[in-house]
Image 1 (tube, rainbow, N blue to C red):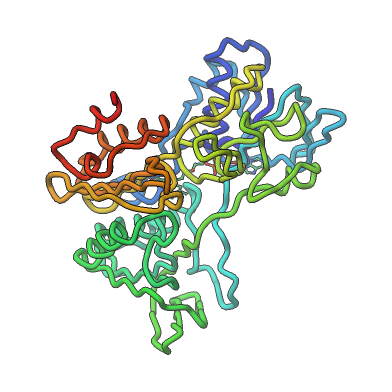
Image 2: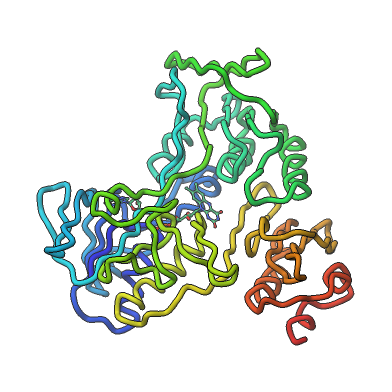
Length: 405
Ligand SMILES: Cc1cc2nc3c(=O)[nH]c(=O)nc-3n(C[C@H](O)[C@H](O)[C@H](O)COP(=O)(O)OP(=O)(O)OC[C@H]3O[C@@H](n4cnc5c(N)ncnc54)[C@H](O)[C@@H]3O)c2cc1C
């Protein structure tokens, strides 16, 4: 069993192979120098904690105890499907019976001239260390892109006293997948904390002198920063699969079982697109921590012959200041929305399809305020339930009772 990509998904897959009793060789190949580690803290605790500790998914001891061979700092450069061999950047090669591609995604590059060493992206622990070095009090940070990673980073930077400007070309932040009502709450929280959020502002030029970055906006204004962090989305890492002749469709295209059209090659996590059973087989690609875990575990199971389809409801969370946002399902499947207000200013929006099916729920509130209801909503979505809108909207009706119904 060979796994390419030692991230959330690859690490989880390797451990699951052992959990399921597989006792043959397991090799995990990663091009980063670290043990498999968690990425969500990179925009959160890794920025603000006293020491920027890496949160490993599996320690050296655990990998040794489980007889998982971890090859780090080495890239898989080619797959010879006929010979069942993966070639690595250090000139060596690995034979496989089953291969898992868990190559993740990388930040989308800003296609503009003028970018230099003070214009950076955030994906890896090393990126986080480099950004952290600029987040001290008084430093000016421009964040290009009002998506999750940029906004989480903005919150962390404010906590450290940096002066932060968020530049979003779209009319509002979090355009993709987050309802306007919830995005407005997050926008306000950033402004309250002193972040300057400029929406509907395209960038016409960037000049990075090496000492500072000057960003010219469409309206002629200029934002000057010590560091510009670009967070305009991510693209799946598919070159290895494409060069091996595997189908690519917004990611490495897999069946519901996470198998590619090659019966011995699987793909999972951020790098793959797959049919989502709960939405009638709609092909999606998710960039979410829990999905990477779930698919890593499922891919391992199916590499051992289980042939089970991925059936989970998508779930995502984001922490900014004291607020936690959670989304279960895909809100763009909804045609109408029902609002439920909870205590402490928390709220949940339920998204209903035309036929009344609950297809998604988006919640925001302090700490864990929405966690329980989002969990119950997720179960209702999985059941393809059609709860009465009045019941969803009333805090007096327990969601648990709707599940039983
Ligand atoms: C800053 C940040 C914050 C996030 N916060 C949240 C959050 O709050 N909530 C949430 O749900 N999700 C969050 N995510 C998303 C979540 O971390 C990802 O969805 C998850 O890491 C995906 O796991 P993966 O294993 O598919 O890919 P990755 O974690 O990207 O791992 C893929 C690994 O494969 C390596 N690789 C690629 N190609 C090769 C090759 N040819 N040879 C060898 N190695 C290779 C890569 O370098 C990488 O180490 C966040 C992501 C980031 C970057």
